[in-house]
Image (cartoon, rainbow, N blue to C red; front, side, top):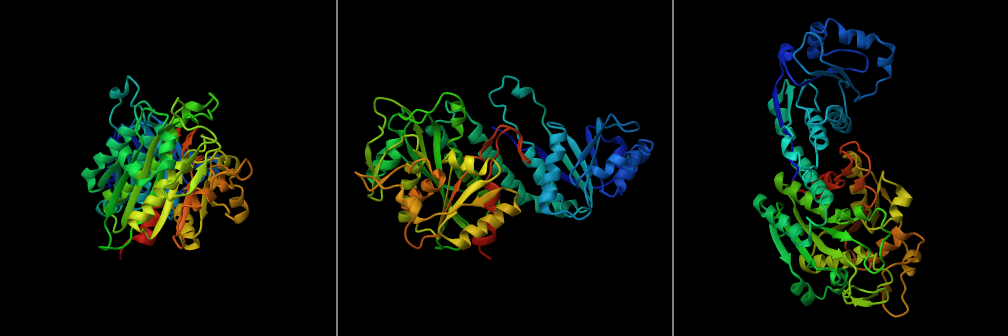
Length: 491
């Protein structure tokens, strides 16, 4: 598993720059104003920073730009990084700047001379997020040196206290990335459940429902997805009771297809290896629950994930089969590769029946159609409740996680009509991500605030993002944590 870098806050002493080893960071404003540590470094390097600032190219550098001077003369450091940063910055700018620092020197220990900047905690969070690496299955992984990050600040105690809850969120993001990056022969349904059970150590109440229990509950839709696999289907429940006693919880529901071949509706071979990430929605739910528990959120939240594997076999569900959901609705399975909604519909109904939540949010790498519509910049957002949806969009923007609302409507719902059952599991090619959301909406009770997040385009990327290296992003943990903080935490 990945580990967070050793990150600490220390007293700010600009004179100590001369003896610092490793990588040292000093701050310069876009106008070229050096802080105390930068002036000290400038003197030690015989005016190199002043010459850098005087160069015409310096004016082109934007907020968060990192300029690196290797083996600076007069200093013990391996590298001196000049971070271009205004004195007044937003939290997003601070997080992005911290991430850029780590990206400029990945895997390197670093001392950031942060002076008195007010957003040092957010800067540290950006560094923690971007410090992630997943090399569990590389033979040389144990030889990687431990990374240490020190942030020197004039109010280091206050900044350390401000960083503590942000560090909890970053740990949740790291866990989500670990789960999404893990290969399917390692992260089986049973292993996924075991890792969730381990989170009882941080105060979560954990319950695992096995196949026999799911059969008794009537979860025919979920069970039909996993019946072609040797891995047993499960539902994992994580409960955090940090709010008022008896207050209805917020329910987070995640799709946990640990590998998706498409079943009998087999996917093309090219790119199928990426279907290890089809449990991304469940990964975000788990990471969010970890973040809430670690920072001891003053809210009641329950996380439920349906864990299955979609494989072709003699026992697999066939196109044309009809299955019965826990709600009692019958579903004609037109395409076994539209399996995520079959998993979610039963878990959504169970969450409402058992926990009587104040709202429900589900997450899933549900459709390729959402990638066609929104690319890899935004998750698709669907909702029957404007306050819940608008609150989430505000939270996502605050945490720099792209999200865009898409419509729902009766015309899309009509595409799900079946000749032989209550509904089909697909509505055809037009508006595929919307008809998938409409399918899920059928399993949301009247007057229940609900939001569906289609994260197929943002869960795993083929290139580095602002806060993550290539691979799993952990998208959604920060936004959901912020939503809980802003709308659901007790005063």
